[in-house]
Image (cartoon, rainbow, N blue to C red; front, side, top):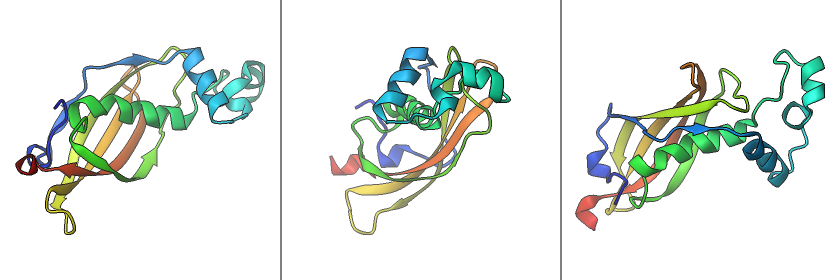
Amino acid sequence: MAGQYYEQLEVGRIFQHEIRRTVTEMDHVLFSALTHNPAALHIDEEYCRNNTEFGQRIVNSAFTLGLVVGVSVGDTTLGTTVGNLGFEEIRFPAPLFHGDTVRVETEVMSRRESSSRPNAGIVVFEHRGFNQNDVLVARCRRTALMLKKSAT
């Protein structure tokens, strides 16, 4: 398994994920179309050039969140999770633009035994996404139900 089992996820452990991803215009436009998001902030370059502080389209925050969490999966939860239990404290302190390259780090914030599933434990991850200038563009906490290695 590429992912880590509950026992391997020590509090304070930080993963520096090797995968980096440059966001393309196609990624963003397709995501906006697939999610039926018609906000001019995402799809109208002329509007953004003349009416926003950024002067260009910004990447949809739901895409940014999905990308940041997705990059983390191979190192943390691939094949070792039962499922996500929730997301919280989601923040986007700076915008992401077409052409930006995202890198991600994940920290294990807490963990505890599951009271209802003896084969699993609950882990809280904090995922942080940065652009190519090391500016934080996304941060979230994700709670996951993780399999125990001893149960496999």
